[in-house]
Structure formats: structure tokens, C-alpha cells
Image 1 (tube, helix red, strand yellow):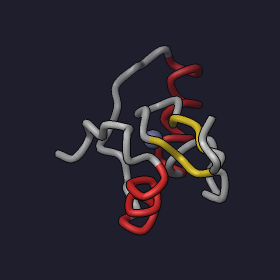
Image 2 (cartoon, rainbow, N blue to C red; image 1 turned 45 degrees about the vertical axis):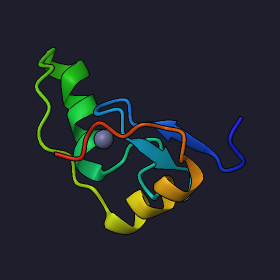
Image 3 (cartoon, rainbow, N blue to C red; image 1 turned 180 degrees about the horizontal axis):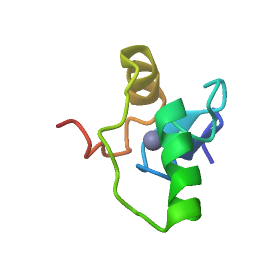
Length: 71
Ligand SMILES: [Zn+2]
């Protein structure tokens, strides 16, 4: 297990640290998308908001983890 607590965002699969205020979602947008998904059945995903500081933190703590959302 990782030394830092992190889960993948249920909406976009970005790794999210526990200290993120929207944990386990990476952003309020993804939280709303997830809620909307359940409400409407729509599974469309908008471009996630990504905090550069968070990504940098994730890069340090998950060096073996591949990031595939850099587009
Ligand atoms: Zn997300």
C-alpha cells in the first residue's frame, strides 16, 4: 500500500489525495458529474479540473504509477 492515502476519482480515475477537499473526487466538477450520472444515467465526462500542485504531489508519491491523462 502507498504511504499516502489516495484513491482514484470515481469519475475520471485521476489519483486523488485524501487531503483534497473534494476527496475521493478530484474536483467539485467530478463530484457533480458522478451525482449527475446516477441521477440521469448519462456517462459523459467533461475535461477534469487538475490542480498542478496536486499532480506534482501525486508524481512524487506514485512514481511507479503511470499517468495517462496528461492530454
Ligand atoms: Zn475526477
